[in-house]
Image 1 (cartoon, rainbow, N blue to C red):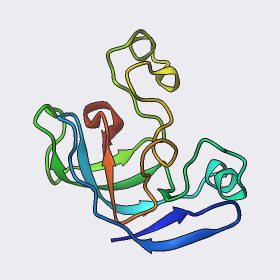
Image 2 (cartoon, rainbow, N blue to C red):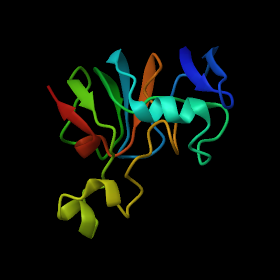
Image 3 (tube, rainbow, N blue to C red):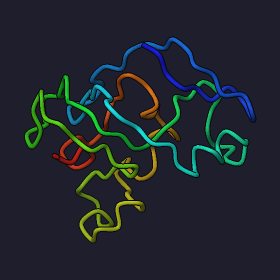
Length: 136
């Protein structure tokens, strides 16, 4: 599949990368229908976010259709149209229970296009699909 990939400061690339798969029981794979570029993507491209590894697929928000779900995903189904949020939330830690998803202690927070491959691609793996992919 094609994806916008960070290859270093000032060096975006449109590359062939492997299509994501479900890796964890709470994952979903979403076919991306529409994306947006936000200021954070531009900061990454400038090299202002050193925690982003070279080779990372950019992007952290999208609209798409679920193509595959992990075994523990119960709130979403294949074929659901969803909004993929820029902030992922485990839904269980004290911060998520308080609605402070950006502070997630369970592996969420700002991870798409930062810690894991993001949405500027034909497909994206969404962690915590029950809370990270909102129905449309």
